[in-house]
Structure formats: structure tokens, C-alpha cells
Length: 360
Image (cartoon, rainbow, N blue to C red):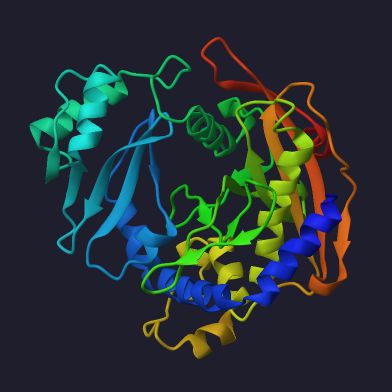
């Protein structure tokens, strides 16, 4: 298939069964309803590298009094932090997570923890001390090397300035509730044949996740949202050309999402304004979404989205990279490559490709 054929097929699948629209409308409303609570609670605890904190649609949209955050080491979940209605910060480590840390990471004192005090419990202190004294390298026995690379790239992209040795400037990951996340889509895209994946009692989306959603600044007054598909290998049977097909499937979904009835809500969620600049900061009744829609910024008439493949340097087949204008959605997809080299520890240390060229 060609790039344009992938886009047309994805659009056909999304338009033929639009059940996903009501699902993402519900997701957006629940996220906005809980955004302030989730974000403020996430500031009640500090997590130091190499641990990273992730959120998810499911965690942010939860109406429970307790807010939950996923703790990851080398891209792998190692525990959950929760903040309850009393603003107490608790750590939970499942029996499986504890066993894995002991057997694979060498954490001799690892044990199951059930909502213990994050700051003062001896088990939690031991947990933090162990991971603080470890590093994410290619020698760590984790389940998914790709997830490890993803975490390293998120840390790299989230640096603010060159003074922090930022190797690719003008790019920042989008956050949900102030934390890293992967946006779950209603599409399976890994086989390069877009297929809807909707299930659950409340009819939820169970498709593939976008590896990295980011904001990329192309000039002083121009930035674009970017859909980035990551691979930890560059090989012929999963080439750059085919990786772009998967990225385009997810990018086409984002275009349809922003053109849907909840598009203004998602545009607001993606912008992730600070409390000082948040147009909803004074809203009290978050059930009145008609009123909320009235104060939100409109989605631009024309959308420009970056679609990026991110993988190690290699010799796999590279596909067509010309811009694609999709009239039905009034969107232009700007296609880029981004390649990385790794250091002695297997972590990305240098970038090349058309995206880097465009940002220089």
C-alpha cells in the first residue's frame, strides 16, 4: 500500500463505524472533569530519575476520590502511587512486581506493598533507595526493550534547554494530568491494516497506543502536534517505510478526533495550559459542557500535523516523505524521519533525519 492508500483506508474504517466518537467524547469530558484534581495531586509527591511517572486516559478520567499514577523503571511498571482524598501519598507494589524486581533487577529487599506511606514506610524508603541507585541501560532485564527506549526518549525530549544537554531542541512530549502518557486509539495499526478495536461493558477503545505525542516548534510562531511511532530496531521486515504506515494510521485517527464533536475538548486537552492560562480555571460546574465548549478555543480550520518515524540508524527501505493534503479533513500531514544512535549503555545519544534537519 501507499501512504495515501493507508490514510484513505483508515478514514473508511473510522467513518463506517463511528461508535468511537461517543467513546472519546466521554473520555474527554471525564478527563476535563478530573483534570484539576489529578494535576494538583500529582504535585504532592516527587519522583527522581531513573523512575518516571506515567498517567493514562483510564487513570485521569477516573471519578474515584483516589488519583493513581504509574511508576516505571526502564519503561516497565514497578508500582503505583496513589493520592487519597485526605491528600495522603501511598505506594503499592504488586506481588508480581515485587517478585520481578527481586529476581530480575536484583532488589533483594523487594516485597509486596499495599498502600503504604510513600515518604515514611520502610518498604517504600527501601524501594526508592534501590531504584535511585540504579540506571536504565541495555543490561537491565526488562520485558520490553522498546518501552525502555521510549522512556529514555521522553526524558530527553522533555529537557527544556540546551544547557541541559538537550540533543533535539524545539520538541516537548504532550502530558496528561502533568505526566507522560500514551494515547490509546480505537485502531489496531501494528499489522498496517487499520482495524477497529472497541470492547468492554462501557464500550471502550482497546486499540494501539501512540508511542509519543509531542508538540514540535518549527518557528517562533508556528508549532504542530506530532504523532511519533517508535521502533527499537531498524530491520527489513519492519522498515522505515512500513513504520510510517503505522504512524499514518494513528495520525489519521487524531485528525478525525479533532474534527469530531469532541474536537474542541481534545484540542484543549492537548494544549495542556498552565493553571494561570487555563480558560477553565474558574469553572465550578464541570457537568455543563455546553458552557465549557463556548469558552474553548476552536480547532483551526486547517490542521498541520507532523507524522514521524523514530528508530535506530540502519539500512531499511525508506518510504515517500512528501507532505500529504487530505481535503476531506482539511489537514496536511508533514512526514519526517528521525533516527538515533546509542551510547555504550544502549541509550539514545545522537539524532539524525529529516526532522532534525527541519528544526535546525
